[in-house]
Length: 183
Image (tube, rainbow, N blue to C red; front, side, top):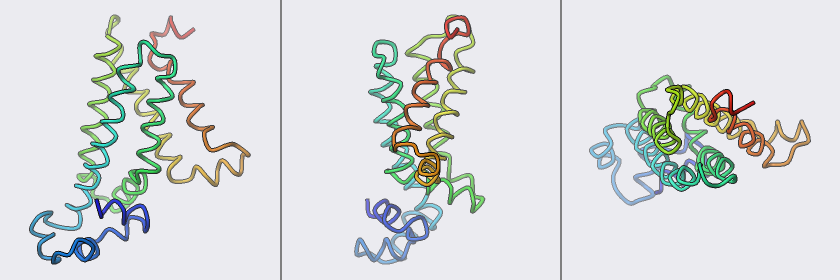
């Protein structure tokens, strides 16, 4: 998608109706008709990014119970979407603009992720939803922070580029296990 390429190359300010219309050879009016506004275009872009993330997460979720590498795979999928996929910058821009309604695709994705993990792992003690919601919050906030300030912060701390991902993946099982199992 041309809007995603603009986001990755020029940041959120580069994703305008006029610029995207020029890129794809249509009029500005055509895009307004289709998306309604620049906010509608940005929301559609966020929805597309979230759909890509959901697809990547499906594989990791299936492996959660059977493969000890699955937590890192799950973390990598989220971190990649926020960093390389541009979702972190776009989400920050949306939040700073104050139009949180554009984040509805993110709400759908995170609630879907919580339910998918809970379905895969089960809920024998009735507390899985709270633990899994906490884990998803932890992963998403970490990925968001990594996307926005990770490289300079890692440099300040003399850490390699995968250090954040390894820390989060290592802590993830503590969120997902029952308290007695985590000890």
